Length: 210
Image 1 (cartoon, rainbow, N blue to C red):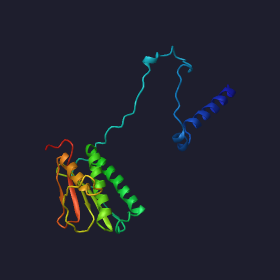
Image 2: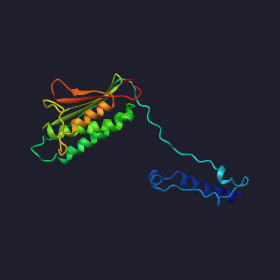
Image 3: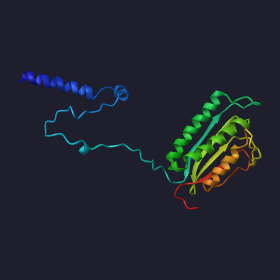
Image 4: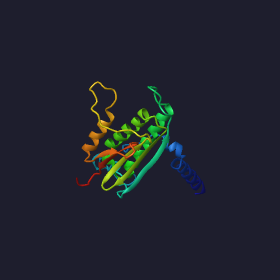
């Protein structure tokens, strides 16, 4: 009996090591699939294939925060762009990082239904500030306000912000027109602050009456 206990203890330790392997090993290892056709059945006859229950994991939308208030208020430092020179790689990287943070904050705020259009607007306004303002600092603010998601990009450089029709062959000038179209499609409005340093856009949140 003591020999059997020794063998059982050794088998138990082997199973524990297999079940409680390192996290790295578990994350990198492929999933193992059980072949029921070759598995012993100590209880009774095997279940028919149609009787086997399977489950599927589904990620539910994040409910988010629905109350009014700031979701994000961040600034990045950039080098002023001179002439037609492309922006510095590190500045483009900072813009990309700010976009990823904005996407997470929009989801956190319960505005996933606006995600695609909101991120297009964020991208257009951030890119415009980086390429055309000559600024050294760009600020992005997201907030929930009175049934709307408000997006504000401010570069600190006073300018007259007007919507112009871009020619069909124009390589630039379409950004603000796209922003205005997306805002209108989402039942909102847009404009600039009194100093002309920034553009704001309001997008109606899902479930809010028009």
